[in-house]
Figure 1 (tube, helix red, strand yellow):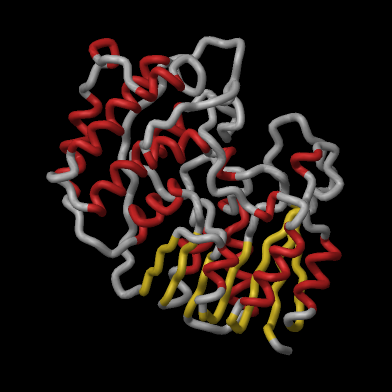
Figure 2: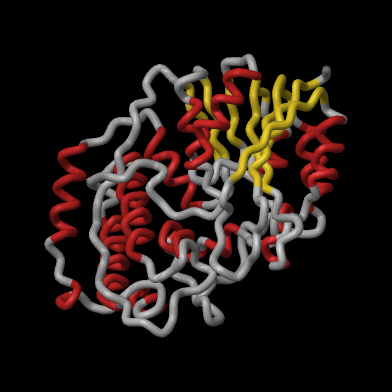
Length: 336
């Protein structure tokens, strides 16, 4: 087996909606350059690569940036070498490995103790190979570790907490991601705050899928961020998080202002916005920071707006109550 870009658990993933969203873009927008400015899993950028020649992929998480570069960058890599490294990792017996940063902090919590030892060993080993692998190969190995770790994690799909009160079994198996052939396409990958990136962006079609509630993605996926950066900081609290970093204004009360600034700044022909109607959720952490009316008003000041919707089951860990949940797509013809 090998991992495709959508083979991960990610809150708000558009994997199940990608075909619908891309069909709306292709039917209602004209242009040859596309930007996914809050790219998340990267599934919309991936799905649009068949329709345009130039794709910008932006997100400010360290883990997502490495994943995009592993899957999409047009750079050489030695597949046989990577398979050999994979086989070396698969032969490692956790019982014979020493404890490491990962097993110290995450063992028996986010992963079984043995799985955490293997994950930490592999991450240390990738850094030790710096003179034997190129940057593309390094990104592939780290991304493969992230996907493999996520598949074995003792969580409900994010890392805001781990599951307690049950035996954590050894489930980790290292497997490689499957990089995509992007030859002939202009791929631009960046790790920036979306509002700052918009100041220098010129593009035909911009897709916007920001966080809409108080759940900060850098905190939701702190374990994957930590494994990617591998600075080995001290961790705090029951969820074992590092000190806050990469905090988004879209998860705060200032979200409508941030969104308006983004829309006003964009230099493009079409703006496509995904929105989910969790504003009336019983859970305050799930409740939208931008109301449907606020969003409509901001977009209508930019151009002519078309609205599409379909029923969609939103991520639910069991503490929220969503009824009649819909996913909306707004398409703005700028300047009309």
